[in-house]
Length: 136
Image (cartoon, rainbow, N blue to C red):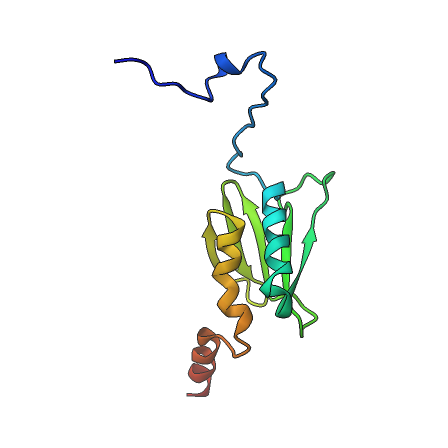
């Protein structure tokens, strides 16, 4: 059986002028160019009427926090959610309670995952349940 052609074969890439990008390390905490671009496109589309983004990044800073994006509802002064990269995953959390909302394979899926929360001005079902439990 003939050997299949592998376009990423290092032997074929040597001297070709093609740069082979390294895979992200598991603890990688910086937003990639693609992450930032996808967030910018998302925020400039339909989301612009409901929220705004702010990217926190310090290229010289080497700490455990890394880069992250804060998402604000347009009517609020405090961020409601944050998004960050952890290796291959994009994680999303609610800032008020520190509640982890999930891990996503890319920025677009992460932002689409919180879209219903951004558009819904009503309190979350979790908050309503907690209030009911306190009032019993």
